[in-house]
Image 1 (cartoon, rainbow, N blue to C red):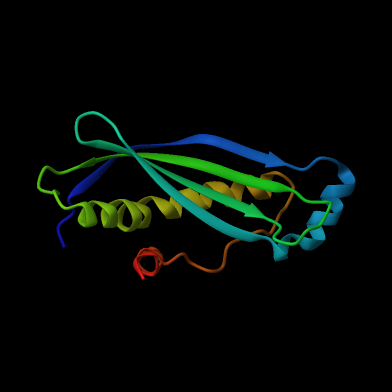
Image 2: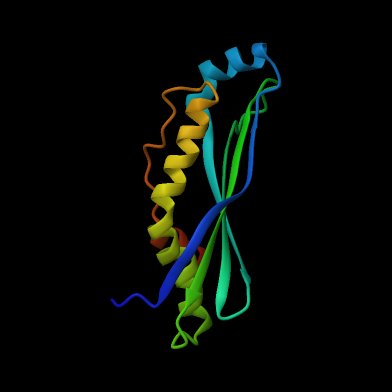
Length: 140
């Protein structure tokens, strides 16, 4: 399949790593394997057939613990879509699947490194994100 978009640039739009104190850090270090990753993707039209695709990763404790750390990165990709793309569904699939498949490995690598550098060494996301499945599940 011929690629009908081009990623012009990527950048970190917002970043938050919060661990309120040493006691919380020690507690979280033992529990971080229970933390879950969630993904939220939004897009905004720009000029000249360009679109900002914002991919937000949040890594947090789903349990209701008082002591918790919070990790979030909002990563923007500026994408130029070819004139030939007219169909709304085709555009959605490009933004939610194709762009993600191309830029996500770099985003995940940055996020994991930041979490590790924040003192939580050994954190990694073993489960690979299937953007096609997420896209198709959304339609059903």
